[in-house]
Length: 356
Image (tube, rainbow, N blue to C red; front, side):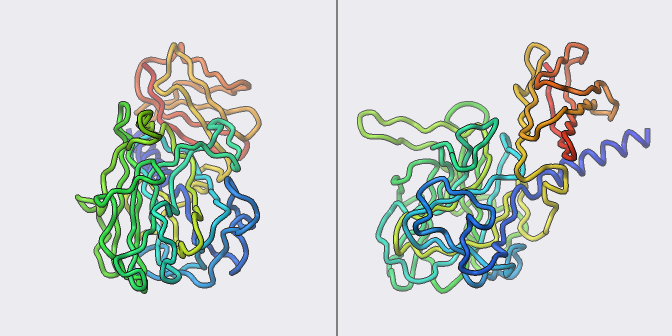
């Protein structure tokens, strides 16, 4: 019995750590180099006006990403970039936290200056990191404040680039100060009911627990398109990465210390997914989940045979085999909730699998 409890403890710990750091980006690169020279991918624009590494990082006393490395400078038109997560996320909530400060007073009067969003790739199964789906979700905006010389505002929208209402915009913020921002996307069962929220913290605010009420949101899908053909944007079925965007000259945004997690934790370092068994550039897809007709497909972007082990909730092995194809036969498995461990090469991933 002790061995079973130990297994469950280890599995729980593994799942927790597996959720901890889906992405860590402290921009610890040489100042003035481009993000694309440091692991980021162009998905819009060209090499003209690249996103550059800012000289010096941002500081926010108790945040884990404070004063580590440099930062990203988003102050031009042209290139937009993205970075994949360590693993896909398709349920629960996803939190992207980062530090934000204008590099100077905003000279751009555009209301479409969104600089951050969640994304999925055009091909979800075998992603090409230079091609992202147009379903940009939880877009974060930077806008001029009441006094553009000294103030700015942050905004949030679920989907549309140019649909910002007063209720989706913060009060005036001080351009001389650094703020901790958390953008949250929540998957909700059903259609057109996922939500996006934003939390904005000034230096000294308590951040140990998630506030009951976000600064902005929660916001659900908004109308997009031209009247009379407006439609509601779809919910995301999966989150695979984050993007940084340059919309206009004078946007003057500095972003630093991006951490993506599925739990609210802004102060502890956590464990990267690569340590927990994920490869930063590996995509593991298990579908459908719950399994249908006693079959499930398992796709890994790493080539090679898949060593499969299926554990029940008590830690007992109920199925073990080597897969040379993508389809797993579950005819011999009873209905229930299992942990599916997949090893391909040196990479091992564990996924909760429901068999109906």
